[in-house]
Length: 155
Image (cartoon, rainbow, N blue to C red; front, side, top):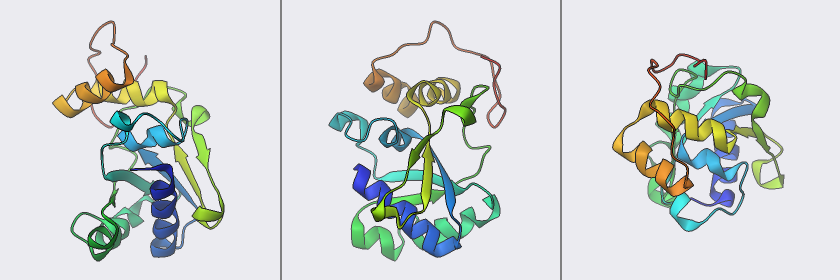
């Protein structure tokens, strides 16, 4: 996924939900702090996204823009509607969010994780795809924290 494709998803999510601000978690949130990252960091065609002030509308995003949707079939990428419990994030992550807003988002805002917060979320999840993402970020954790998904971690 490219930065332009993420901006398109933010605009489309806004159209579907009539919301203004969104949070992007997961690997494609790298496109906030690094608009043009190396290709190995943008291999996913999915962005995990939820409306910042109306998480219950994430299902609308999933239905209209999700995997297998007309949107996905048309553009080749999609949005997965998630919520704030999807990623286990360190304290202070909200203060470090990176704003994505442009004419391509139709003025709507997507807040993406800072690289260190993405790294910590991937460390907490610790699935094979998360370990692969960490390798692509070229950062390795000093240890594996013992934390529960959906809980703000005290790193």
